[in-house]
Length: 377
Image 1 (cartoon, rainbow, N blue to C red):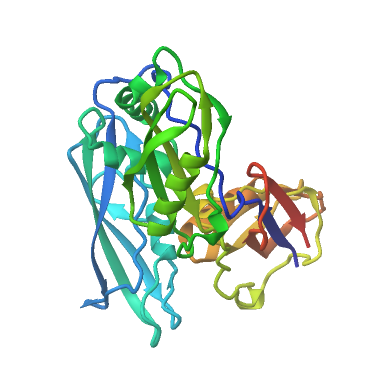
Image 2: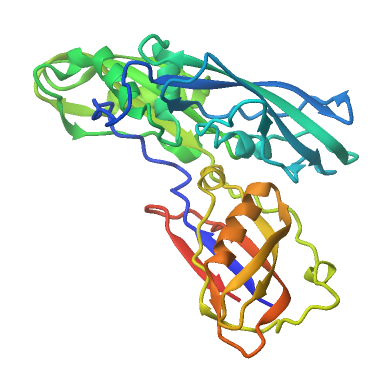
């Protein structure tokens, strides 16, 4: 039996702030006149036709894309709720229109949502609609939220940065102030619900001595502790280059406590009775591991059970996702991982092979960029 364990490093649980807002390059080959924000509206949630209200609802991240219709969807996400109140067996959304590429956080946001504990619920559905807001007329506060929180950088990213840069251009005249000391909040002391993030954008001026003045919240999503800590951090910072007005800086707090995957079933329940596959067969070309990035951003673990055959020359084929949790996207990722692997050649090949791919995140804080570290057990 082969278990494929993927360990992907998370950023530190007290994350560093994003870089200051700057103007980005234009996107070649696309019309820059109508880049838009996509804002998702979570509508009704029903299980077996009965409305169900979540205890905590996690709002999906905004997306930045190029021109789309004013309204997108509706999308339907199907799932069930286990006895602990956790959404599981989440299927990819369906829609009468094309599923938009900027929507990668919808399923992870649902996976992070929690419902009342008690009896498990089957046949659940969540309806999602979306609206697009042209970036050139979007409220600055909405752009702050899209920019400051960890997100997938879409095709409209440069336009969003350019709009924000123009809003605070007076701070960078004739050039950006030098940073003598950039103070940060003590993020670990700031409460944050699991698998969620909050942001605060601080506006301020700089006096002749390089000390920030009039530090205040320009926009935030209401985490009072982060708001207060962010304002104090700006007050404690120091700059060079003379007096300035209209400066800003974004901070965010991400709660990166890992949420373990749902319990994994016994592989024997999925193995065909006529299987001809050595459980201890070693990989000649080990699986090349990759973690579904939208789930990594929310620190959600998962697993999938994959059935497959092996050709005499070692190539895997006839792959099928037999089960996956908490979402079908882990099955899609696992199928791709096994498809690219190769076992040692044999005279007859193999059939009816069943393996489990486990997507695992470190339990402690980790510094540095994302890294995939596969282990085979």
